[in-house]
Image (cartoon, rainbow, N blue to C red; front, side, top):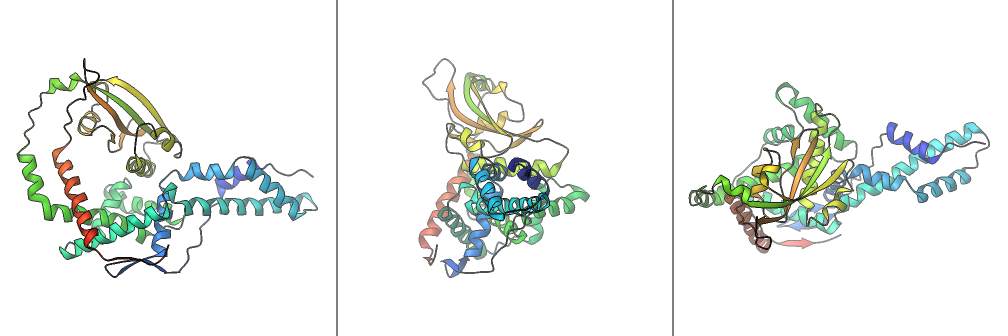
Length: 362
């Protein structure tokens, strides 16, 4: 009796099957932050979000290929004991669904390689940020959140509503609620306004005291060692596809620790590659990217941008003055952004030290 191969079955299943994982209603309190709860549901939702935006396809593929899944498939088929070709096909269909559901459950529970503790720490900080915004009477409306999300989803004009709905649905299929998505972006907008309201004048004074007197000719006196993270976009007219790639690139940027580790991180995202360019002048890079590269410091990545048929982000590994290989180039990051980050880190640390954080579960 001939049985379809596991590779054929899993390939067919991945192309046709959409599974919606069960989301538990359990609301066990994990942490109290100034008497406001973070629940097990909150943690599970964020783990799913992290998994969905951190190489989801490649992680699924890793679970559904190789000797282990083939062996499980054969064992489950033998246990089913089909007596005919029709029974064998039915058993194969049922087993492939079980294998895919199990793989998806594991991938979504892994949080894209982010530990549960790290996710809880992020949620604690976000709760503190929202509480700070509330004290300053800063309120981010649902309309503001959805406008921001629509832009990220690639919607413009009459297409905004449709693009936003597509954006929500791609995550809801994997058990991430739109409320979770909205709260993630609400925190970002609220904290931005907190820092502007508390430290805006001081940040502005830095800009006023930092004239842009660097000569343009100096740009070509610097050499850059750069790693280009490239995420292919198969259809650049598809704004949804571009939005998804932007999110994946931003997530890799946030995880970036070193140029050495970047290729391994990129392997977790389908269609992502890393190219090395060493001892290159700023003029060697696309014009749209040059200002971004010149502003970031060594060991940092630029924000992702669409270049041709791919979303790209540039990791600056080294800056050096030409003719002085051992002398680092003068670092001139954007002073406004540098001050924003400084005040943001300092104020968040201050709030965390003052906060009542009661860990009650794991």
